[in-house]
Amino acid sequence: MDIYLCSTVRHLLFSLLKALSTPDKKSCLLMVTDQQNIDIQNYDLNRLPNFIRVVFIQRSDINKNLLKYKLGKGIKVLANFNIYTSLRMQSYFKKLLFTKLIPIANHIKELEGGDLYLFNDRNKLSRLLRLTSGTYSIIEDGAANYLGTKLKKLEKIGKLITLNQQKKRYFGDDPRCKAIYLLNKDGAPEYLKKKVVQIEFILPHLIKEYCLFFFKEENLNETPYILATQPIIQNDFASSGRDLIVYREIIKYFKSKGINIVIKTHPRESVLKYKNAFPDILIMESKVPLELIIFNGENKCNIISLFSSAGAGFEDYCHRLTLIDDIELENLKSIINSLKEDKKYLEKRIHQRFSYLFNSKQ
View (cartoon, rainbow, N blue to C red):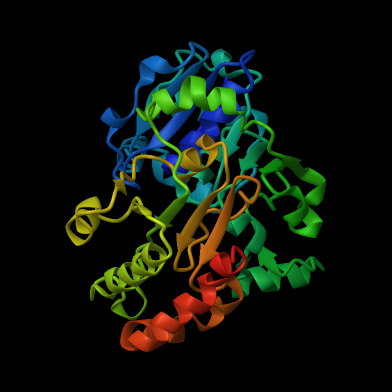
């Protein structure tokens, strides 16, 4: 049995598509509900084929139940320090995790021949699940797979000691990761390319036959322009309500060009906030993965955001339009402050960033 660990609705969509592409194997998709406040009523489990099972879990419950065992604290330490486990230890952890803490099997023999699929192999729950297997695979999580994150001081020291020239951390850079499934294989970090696999499981017929029904969006229409919101904490941008002012100006600009925009709220944001601010605009629920909307259309859609990675890696399916360019993110705080305080600056930037879309049509 293959096991997938999902923390976001995007993860759930990708895991479902990957599992649908391997009908010869049973798959169990573990969906964490307490990260994006997932409502299990939003999904139709009856529309899945019998070789796929979705199990909703809570990190808090797993952690609490783990500590009931005498070795619970020790197991957490092993997971946190990313300890390699022997076959005997893996067998023990499989029995503990998958027949008791997350009871998806009656006996560990049901898990034989299966693979473990993660999106972020460094979060606490992923580390815990990694104790059950000698190897695992990574499925693309977003821009982080290509951009990486800076090494911490201790990590830099460790790399120097081992003469490792790696300068950033990437999902899947652990030797135990055997494959990294990416949409843009050519954009992968050079030293990881040997284990990068091009994603080929995003198939329109699977989306139409299963995914739309599973997410209860069988009547989802093609949407040419989508404004993807994001919870920006810099300079109290969201809490001050300035984000709504910026979004309003973007909507106003596109409307002046004869284009109506649909808003797709970020899973960590309140849909009601946007419904109150924009009563005349269609607001798409956060339970719908943005990628499902992207993949569902026959034509490329346009994903508009302030600087979100939404749409990154999906260039074959959409156009990514950002108010702040990726190369400007080092000066993000300053730019956010200008957007917050100077309306003329905001209007000028909107024109500079988006006017080419319409100039090319003239």
